[in-house]
Image (tube, rainbow, N blue to C red; front, side, top):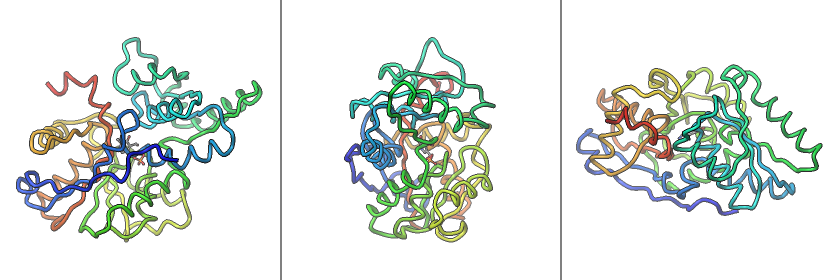
Length: 299
Ligand SMILES: Cc1ncc(COP(=O)(O)O)c(C=O)c1O
C-alpha cells in the first residue's frame, strides 16, 4: 500500500554544517506528504495493509491532544474510505489548532481521557472501544500509540534501506520507540541515537526491546540518549526554540517543539562538545503542525 511519498530526499545541510563545524545531512521525512507528513505514515503503510486485509471499516488509535500519529491515522483512514476514532489525552478544546484542528476537519470521532488513564489504561480503553464497536457490527482495527509495534516498525527498516551509505551518527527523535526500533532492524547506516523527548533512557530501551525480539541490545547499533526532554512532553525551552530558529534561518527547514526540535537540540549540543564529529545524519521526522498554536512562544 503506497500512502507515503517515498523515497524521501537525503540532503547535505551546507550552511548549518559550516555553522556547527560538522558535516550535517538531513533525511527529509517531513516530505512524506502533506496531511500524511512525517514518520508516522511509513508505519501506517504496513499497519493499514493489515487492516484492509482484515476487512476493517474503522480505525481506532490514541495519542496526546496534538498527536501527529492520531492526525496521520485520521488522514489515512479518510484516504482509504474508513471511519476513525481517536482516544486523546486531555480535555476538549473549543478553539482547536494544529493537529487537533485537522482531526476535527477529518470528522474523526474523539474520546477524551485524563493523563492518568492514558498512562495506565490506554490499551484497555482502546480494547473496550473496539469491543463495543464489534457489538455494533463494525470491524475495527486498533493501532497502538505511535503506530509502534513490530509491524509498524517495518516501515523504518525499509526507510533505512533508502540511505545507502554509512554515517558517523544518525540522530532521530524518540517518542514511542517505533522509529528507532525499525531503524535498528534495518541495514547498517551508522550508530543510531534515539533522542528521548519524554520519559527516559531505561523506559525507551525496555519498550523498544519488547517490540521485536530480533532487535539487537542497546549500546551497539542503537541507543537512547536522554537529557534533552526539556521541561516535559510537548514543552520546549529557550535552547530548543533557538535551534528551531537556527534551522529555519539557515536551511529553510521547519522543525517542531515536541519532537524534532529536541532531537536537533541534542545534535547541536553534542556537535558543539565535539562528542559527535564527522558525518552526522539528522532524521527529520516531520511534526510541522505542532508549531501552530505556539505563536506566543515563537514571538
Ligand atoms: C514528528 C515526530 N517525530 C518523531 C516521533 C517519534 O517517533 P516514535 O514514536 O516512532 O518514537 C513522533 C511520534 O512520536 C513524531 O510525531
